[in-house]
Length: 103
Image 1 (cartoon, rainbow, N blue to C red):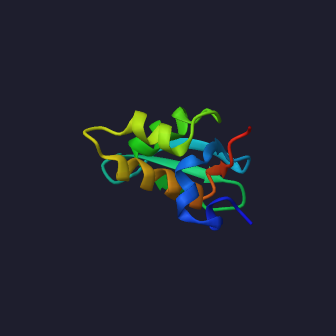
Image 2: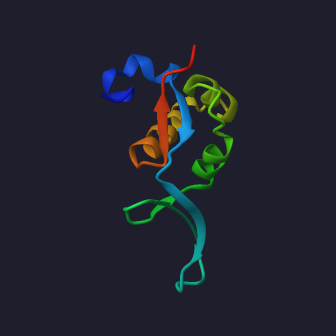
């Protein structure tokens, strides 16, 4: 059973780490006016789009800070819910694993 499935009350105490299945993050330029798109690739899955904020979040994950700590550090103008939502999205997509903190 994953740490997230045990209940929402634990999520803020979990420690995000880059998932072993996360292969790459790339910038792709579309033929439509050469728009830049960020994509993450998880092993065995199709690439999925991520925002600049989600890319910053992936770079900030160090395996030591909890969801609560990262959310507080990366939120701008008190937008804690956006950072937390992005973090949970990346975990659900397989780019991040959420682990219980080591004692």
